[in-house]
Amino acid sequence: MNFWWIINFRVLLDVLFASSLGVLLFTRVKEQRTLWLLRGYLFLVSLAWFVQRFANLPITSKLVDALVLACSLSLAILWQGELRRLMELLGTGRLAVILGNTQKEFRASSNTFAQLTEAAGRLSQNRKGALIVVDMGSDLRPEDFLFPGVPIDAQLSSELLLNLFAADTPLHDGAVLVKGNRIISAGVILPLSRQGISRYGTRHLAALGITERFDRCICVVVSEESGTLSLASQGRLERPITSSRLLDLLKELLDPSSASGSKSTSINSSLKTTSSNIETKVAQSRGNLVKNNDSKESLN
Image (cartoon, rainbow, N blue to C red):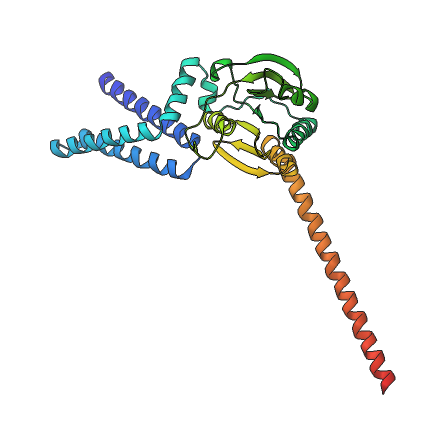
């Protein structure tokens, strides 16, 4: 009796752990194509387990095992960046990032958006290259960078950002790390991305590289050659953008509630404007009809 209870308990734990791992993987994957690949791979693994467990089919079992091994190697090549990031998180003991628990230490205000936008706009006008990393809860640490830079720990301001990216300063080539309303460090060297090497410069590749590894992290990039503004988020780059567009994107990414409120306000105002225009046109048409009728009666 105790023997069968132990077997059932082991099976229950096995199913529970496998289900928890599957739920964790599916909740962390956001791209649709990657989700399809993960579903197909898990289906093959489940099929191989079913054949080995319940069916006495040696040749089929060998073929399914070979297929699972080939798919595992293919996924290891396709997801080498994600697997490297997973091992880094496990090595540093940051399980909260793996489980998807957001950090609550990030606090952004409207002044933060204004200072970042103003500094980026002025740097764009003067064609001075800049790279600003905004940590929204990824808990970036010195070991996450190729070079952690020089600690600053100062209040965020557009004047300080302009001084840090001045051409004659020793820290202008690196990135500036911003967390909340403070500048944490400057002169940070970021890991580069492997996508778009022929299209983008070093700053844009660095912005893509850090946002690929951390989903709660964005980068504001100013091109030194053309002065165009760009915003990198989750391994995607939006460029070129204006200062007003940058402000809207920052509000949307850092404070979605305010962005949705501003969108609804703009929609309501546009609807009000449209309705007032329609009422004005209707009144004008009625007035024209009355004038035409009066002119016809006078002629008669």
